[in-house]
Length: 192
Image (cartoon, rainbow, N blue to C red):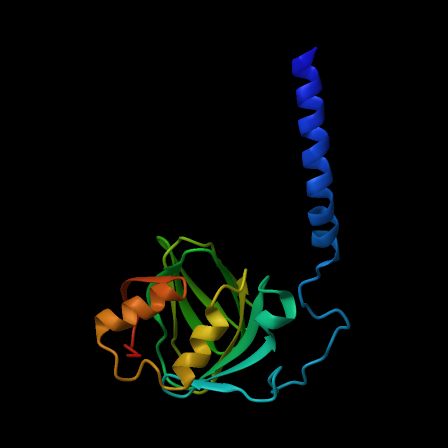
């Protein structure tokens, strides 16, 4: 009987201690967009697109801040052929929707040619790369879920942080943002 009394007293005490934290947790709301919004064609969510690499322009459509990091969506307009190194994301799934032009994708051991209207999915932890293959401007809608540090990384690159980094420093920078480079780009090498 003493044991049950002790257990009952212990459980009652921990319940009283836990209740305020439980109520507090219910009332703490992370910031996330709750009113909806529209981003005009060709416009960026923040009003300022970012320029990367060699003529690539990223226009944010849904920011990491809008979703508490649940997702990040941007439109990538590319002028030159090529694309990123073969890499994988530790925690992000990535989805691409071709709006204009043609791209070669490699996801794991599968290769896909994709044109306007096609989409390709790259699961987290599966190496992937893509490359713009045709002439003229090409555009992708890109989606990361969860957002991770992708938006932060692209912003830092657009500010020039990686311009003078060694290959080793670039790899460390990528890994700090949830990416591991495991091979060269599919075609045209873009150093960043």
